[in-house]
Structure formats: C-alpha cells, structure tokens
Image: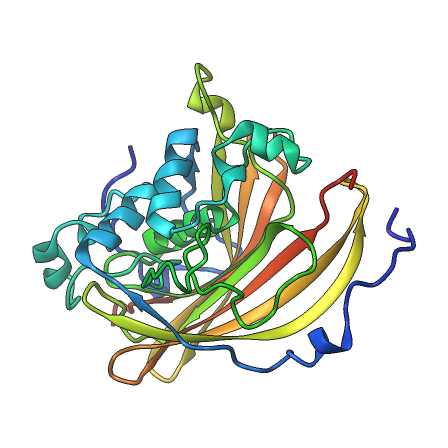
Length: 155
Length: 172
C-alpha cells in the first residue's frame, strides 16, 4: 500500500516534463458496488453481468466517474497535505473491466499517471498544470485528461 | 463507419433547452458520506476518515475528496431511482434508453468543501451533438451539461461539466 500521506512537494521542485508518482488501482466488482453506494450511481451495467451484456457490453465496466475520482486521488497525493486540487478533467474513451469471481484483481490493473505541462504563479498561488491518464494493463490509455493543482512554495 | 447516415434525434424542443437552468438540487455532505466516498475510491489518507486529522490539516471537518460534491437528498417522489439525482436532470430527456458517461470536468474555486456542508446545484444543458458508433452499430447522442455548486454561505465552490452519451438498444 502507498504511504497514507506522501511527503510534501514544493512548487520550486517541479519542472515541466516531470512525471509525478503513479497510483495503481485494481478495480474489482466489490469496489464498483462500494462506489455505487458512495456515489449514489446504481446503474446495473456496473455490477450485473447479464444486464451489461443486454446493453451491448462484454461485461460489467468500471464507472467513468470512479476513474475520474482515481485521477482526483492521483492529484490529491501529488498536491500533498499543503496543496490543493483545482481541476480534474477526463474523457472516457473506452470501457475498463473489473475483476470478478476468482480472477485476481491484479489481472485488471489500472494505473494513473501524470506529467507536468506548465507551471506559473497567479497572484500568490503557485499553479501546476498536468496531463493525466488512466492506463490499462496492456498500456492503452482509456481515460486521458488534464489536471490543475496549487502547490506550496518553499519561500 | 463514422460516415454512416442516420436520422437525427435532436428536435427543436431539445435545442431550446440549451442554456436553460433546471430546478435546484440540494446535496448534503456528512462525515459518513465523505468516509463512504473516500473508502470506495480507495483513499488511505486519514484526513478523510479522522476529524482530528482533518482539523490539524486546516479543514473545518472531513474534506470532500475530488469528485465528491455531496449526495443529492433522496426523495422517491422526485429522485431518479437509479442515479439518485432529480429525475430528468436539467430538464433534458434523451429519446434513447441507454446511457454512458463520456467525460467529467470539475473545476474548484478553492473554497473548502467539507462534511456538514449543503450544496445547491442547478444544471443547464450546454450542447447537443450526434455521431455514429461503429463499435455498437447505433447512433449516439452526446450531451454536455454544466452544473454550478453553491455552498450554504452562497459561495460557488465548483463547476462541473459532464458529457452524457445515450443510445438505442443494439438490435432494436
């Protein structure tokens, strides 16, 4: 498991082109049910295989908004306890499966990554913009997006 | 397959809804709802679970994880039984029965959003477009909705833009 609270990173330590620490997820049917309760979205395509197949899908799929929340967690961890998440944007370009039954959750690994694209100061706020993405086990990107965080300064 | 011809499902009545704000929705954040959301994402940061830690970190109470803008107050008379929000959202109803989420964009103003807050939101349809899905062999209607969230002190805390994709059941 990752550190509960990562060490604080500061605006001065960031350069355009830097990769930020990755976050790894392994969505399971249990997590999708937890998300249904946590978010209030009880659409059956996320936990009922035959319902999902009746709508033309191969199987149950991870909620788009859960992938957005994963990217939010990636940015929350990057911004650290003194930083702030300002924006989380992503597109759902493809379906992502969740592990079920006896499958190992590792078989459905979903990795969140980010790269710094811009840093600037606006008033007293130190702003960092990033390209972010959710990546499947085979390396394909299903969930590209952009994020903005505010970081503290060393000075 | 992108050139496949299909009959447009967009009517003048639907276009007339663009920019028109729907009814307000009231959403609550409680310590339990914040913990539930954070747990479902998989957060291990104690700030989402332990109020003392949250206060040490400068929050009024447990902070809302990114993506959580409260839970709409559920009322069977007007709430959607599947999605929990107000039935019909911003007044727009797609003619297609099946829906997929196309994208989410949430911008925060910097105001804290914490357990104990009550957010009022209103959604307006921002745009309507159509395209053919080669993968499913059906037309898709793509709607973008914009929702503004205001807290109990009248401060805007976030603006979200959601892309919804609706389509007919393949084979129908």
